[in-house]
Image (cartoon, rainbow, N blue to C red; front, side, top):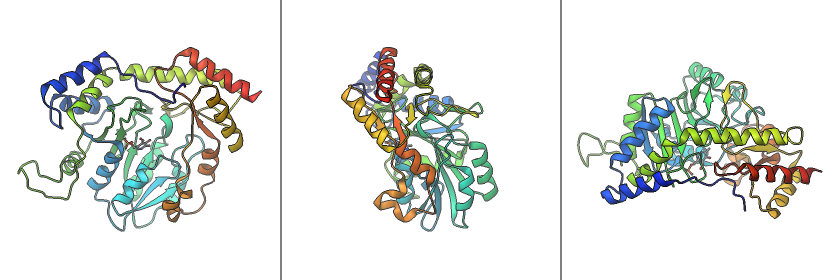
Amino acid sequence: MIPVAEPDIGEKEIEYVDDAVKSGWVSSHGKYIDEFEKEFSKFIGTEYGLTVSNGTAALHLALSALGITTGDEVIVPDLTFISPVNAVLYCNATPVLCDIDKNNWCIDPNKIRGLITDKTRAIIVVHLYGNSADMDQIMDIAKKHKLYVIEDTAESLGTTYKGKKLGSIGDIGCFSFYGNKTMTTGEGGFCTTNNKELYEKMTILRDHGMTSKKRYWHEFIGYNYRMTNLQAALGVAQLERINYFIARKHEIGKIYSERLKNMVTLHPEGIDYNGTYWLYSILMKNENERNDLMAFLYKNGIDTRRFFYPVHVMPPYKKYAKGEYLVSMDISKKGLNLPSGVKLQNGEIEYICSKIIEFLS
Ligand SMILES: Cc1ncc(COP(=O)(O)O)c(C=O)c1O
């Protein structure tokens, strides 16, 4: 089977993890944690950054540090992996689902405006499948209505919007390093920010709410959301190759777009952003065609993924629907993620495209 995504683990990764194990620093202190926090923040272009145990923890920590709580509303896209919606619910706040923009598959700023109430405190932007949301418009709305912006950048590591890396534009950027992501630490996550106060608050909340000045003295109810030095060792090695991973993602995207043009609706190209095709994705004519293509590719040894379901159709989230979600519904039915891991060979991409063309003819 050609997988949708697989990690690229090299010799350096093994060397650094081995070193971390042998050093005895196997929990959340150690040189790799310090180095990874410094280097990853530098790569994204923020002043501060902290490692966390996974991407969902990053989102929960970000919302907690912003003081999001009971009675607050947070606007989130209707087409997303479920984590940002759940993170809002972990804070006892209300997720307000917003439709997406057909041009980039991310939250639609024009629809955000109609959802703002006097309870709205924040917007979580999810940069989907390597794309970027329209950050200028979103930041303008946030400024006007005094809302926080969290960028869920789990799927768009390395994507730049008007030259800036995603995760450095909103108040807090959240990342995931799950094994299928552009770079991995096994499980793991990260929060980036330029705000010292938020950084300090997140650091305390990550470690049980314990103040840094007085051991075992808890100022807040916190969590254990720490990453281990072993995971960070993997992260440091992956980060050394991040520019190669991103360049290879671009190459893969280019080959797919070239081979499949005029056959299917291609993965969108940004005007304001340079996307990284975390998962190169296509849209078929309708749900049946998408499902049939998936089954055909599977029979031919090619794994693919359907797009996420619209959040508002799933039982626990139905009550958070506000209005219609025509774009989210439409794209969810038609969308297919193709194999996009950096270890994918050009010959394999050629084979995948030839099978898609065979199916269509
Ligand atoms: C958009 C998005 N946000 C958050 C997450 C959650 O990350 P994790 O699995 O590390 O908790 C993921 C996926 O893994 C994701 O795709």
